[in-house]
Length: 115
Length: 112
Image (cartoon, rainbow over all chains, first blue to last red; front, top):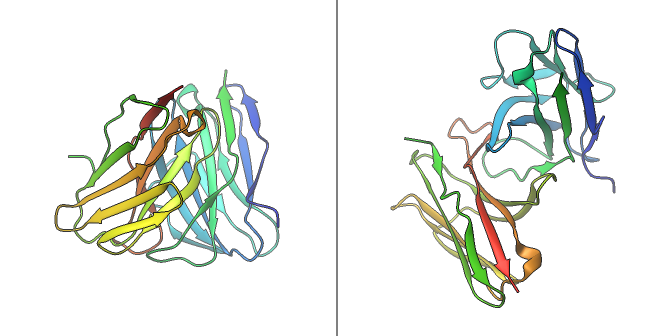
């Protein structure tokens, strides 16, 4: 039973390029969450998605960032025109269902470096 | 005031001792509380969750919740050097979407 799979594990982008981060949830999980961890900081919620729906994007920057979770395939976090401040570890978590008390399991993360 | 607060540490304990990690939260509507362990450069790993006031034990770990004081703690008995990591306290969002609000984490060092 594979866990949450994220790829790539490491991603280097030049300023102005696009970054695409992928997340496949655990088998049987239909709820996906994206978090960002800046160096020496805690995890910050970005967005919560179910298949084909964005449930909560209150933590997502208004510009350059978008997320999707299509009917088929992984969830994608997309960052357009990356800047140095986007350098961080991006973690995806998945759960069986949403709501209070849901146990979420994390993937290994994608470490984005913007040069 | 931060929504979830932890002392960043480092908390240093000798091998075999009890490590006590503390967390306070600001929103009284919070319902679920989680402890994650994160080794340097790795992803968070869920180790405990608690929903009701009182204690919950799982092996060497005990989670304690006091909703009146808005306080949750994690005790690690017989601490081992392999327990050295950052421990993240997470609180379920009052909006009930399953979103977690994390503290900054407490770094634990267990010295042999």
